[in-house]
Image (tube, rainbow, N blue to C red):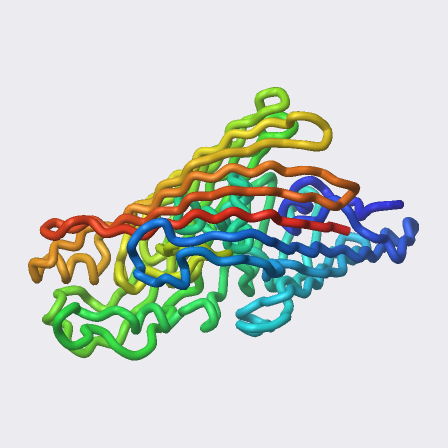
Length: 401
């Protein structure tokens, strides 16, 4: 079966699956059409192992379902133009709904040869993680909130890429909290300091650079920035202006060591939750994270995290991976407000430890058992620290075509 002939850089941008069904090919015109998909389900169990939150319903639960990022798509190529249309099981935002199927990706890329490539449409931003950790909990974003950033952030944007470098101008639509997270913030113990919607004064700007380390390794550095303002109602309560600066930096490396590898990713940012690529959250023993703690930290919260992972190929069928992650969330307006009132809230410290065993059952079909422990500790200057922890065991079944 013939495959779409794309350069390595473009293949990295559009994330073409390893498998596919070619339905049309015309080599003379450089045209082809390919269908592909990925069906991802999970089964397992989990529960809270701490006394917070106090909810007996979460002491233990049975987990089964499909991952929201199960998808089906069409790749097409005509000459130097490549297009992708991809539908997801559940997709929010531009041309999608928060609770049902929608367009995950829809974009076109034109290859100028030595002049680089230009992409327009809904596509992942350059500042997502990029595959430096394998925790598939939370729809393959198991690191987001526990040391890493999200693995998927599909936004309407314009991208230009050349020689591994990418620059993008991104529209963060309302479904990804342009305004909602700005209105959540209050000056604790008094009237809201800022209310109403926030306004994006500039589109978000993102830069990234990616390269290979040997045949199977990789390196990535990326940064993004966005500027908002807020409606002021009682500015004297906080002394802060209505300006909101948001952005984050990430650096990742995956180093091959024969049949093994070592991987790490570091990220630091402020207000990354406003565009959905950083967060502070907890596990309640289910699939995905609950008890979102972004509002408890408040606007202008800073987040710094690190994930370390190692893995090895045992044989042609079985591999092993294990890792640890840590994130600190600090200096948010809610945190500073409560500390000023004597409550002494200081920071959220989020930890995780996980291991998984990918098993290649057949071509395109993979079974992955995984066990993960997730803990979030809130430190306080006066009262004792509180924490919420959970243990989650899952088996993912994934079929790609």
